[in-house]
Amino acid sequence: MSTLVAAAAGAALLVASPASGAASTLAAAAQQSGRYFGTAVAANKLGDSTYVGILNREFDMVTAENEMKMDATEPNQGQFSYGNADRIVNQARNQGKRVRGHALAWHSQQPGWMQNMSGTALRNAMLNHVTQVATYYRGKIYAWDVVNEAYADGSSGGRRDSNLQRTGNDWIEAAFRAARAADPNAKLCYNDYNTDNWSHAKTQGVYRMVQDFKSRGVPIDCVGFQAHFNSGNPVPSNYHTTLQNFANLGVDVQITELDIEGSGSTQAQQYQGVVQACLAVTRCTGITVWGIRDTDSWRASGTPLLFDGSGNKKAAYNSVLSVLNNASTTVPTTTDTTGPTTTTTSNPGNGGCTATYSEGQKWSDRFNGQVTVSGTNNWIVTVTVSSPQRIIATWNTSATWETANVMTARPNGNGNTFGFTIQHGGNWSWPSISCRVG
Ligand code: G3I
Image (cartoon, rainbow, N blue to C red; front, side, top):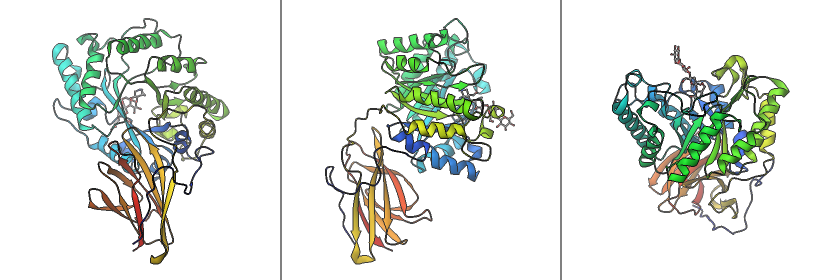
């Protein structure tokens, strides 16, 4: 068996892919500047091979379109139901994608039992829901939409009337505190629509809330801008100003449900404008579109997405990809990105098996890596991580574990490149890789 080489940062080794350049998928293009590109996913479409093919190829962040909402996850009070949400979360994580949670508390899509509640009973039921769901998914969610759509449309700039609002104005901060206690590592977002135009009263109302939360230490990390646009609600020319002003409050901003009705070059230009606005803001950490193909959209007749009903890339897709490939600002990362990006181990004495390890995406708590094997299609690769690291997801391989730290990977019919996610626990060293012919 060969030995490898998991070299420390600084060794001069092969470089498999450039740090920037023309990537060919939305996720890869976004990753060049440290951002993600996501989509909403519906559990009942996970059997559609065209849909899943595009999902797996193009996106690195997933939001459950309906399956994590209150009515789906707590259909009866105190009885939680995660089947469809889990299908989405597991599919995403098995593919090395991250998950945005949507949504813990919302005036809409409440289960029937909650719609009829009020006062302290409702407040407690809401907080219990937040706690239970965020606890169940602890460690699996990049960011939660803790509270969704709590501000009123129109000129008031105030809260929307709802049963939750009537439990007291502090219901939002109470939900955020409960979410933080349940999952301390998830980013906690406030998410809303019609908050894109800086001069709108609703935008200003949400801004004042976030400013207030930051000044009082209420745990909020991010603001989600849904970004559902059409001719009646076009992309505002001051979008960049809006995103930047929120970011200046000390929160990340994310475009969370992007869709733009229209077609052709007009639609493509509008998409381009939204993506450019995000890329111009250092703390705009990613973009999610609200569905994959036009026919998957909640407003399908407006053809608002990046793929047509047959799964073909639209002009809007090409414009988004092109803009992502030209990002000028990079999301700051606390991780070391200065080292080499690949290392190779060979075993010429055993049929010429060669395995090349490449770095993938890095996050605060974990990183991706991938291994490409050459010289044989019948390989056995051993991946050894060092404590306290754990491999928490794999893709394109059939994996077994010799110990908690040693994984044996074999082909699973998906070619000779496989990947994995390592939860690093503060240890950023690369895994040791060895390859042999099976
Ligand atoms: O699955 C049932 C089906 O069995 C039933 O026959 C049918 C008849 O009503 O309903 C189907 O469920 C629908 C579900 O979408 C799945 O298609 C619900 O009625 C319908 O209300 C639900 O609409 C969702 C909507 O939120 C309301 O929750 C949309 O899919 C979803 O795209 C939309 O997403 C929202 C975000 O959560 C928040 N921001 C706005 C965004 C767009 O409205």
